[in-house]
Amino acid sequence: MKTTNILKQLFGGGATAGLKELIKDGAFLVDAGTVIEFADGHVKGSLNIPLDTLPNQIATFKNKKHH
Image (cartoon, rainbow, N blue to C red):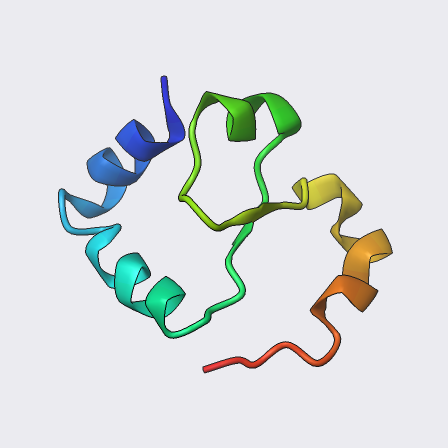
């Protein structure tokens, strides 16, 4: 099952609608799925940092704007 289908099941059809605006505004969007899950489907412009590698990737978030 694609990640986008899971989002739709969890949050309904509008889950990605807000993402478009955030990305347009320059949001730093991280997909914490596995490499295989990311390859299966992801939001355009997102960066794949698998959840189990996040502690080693903290520097990636340095100086990123947050809301």
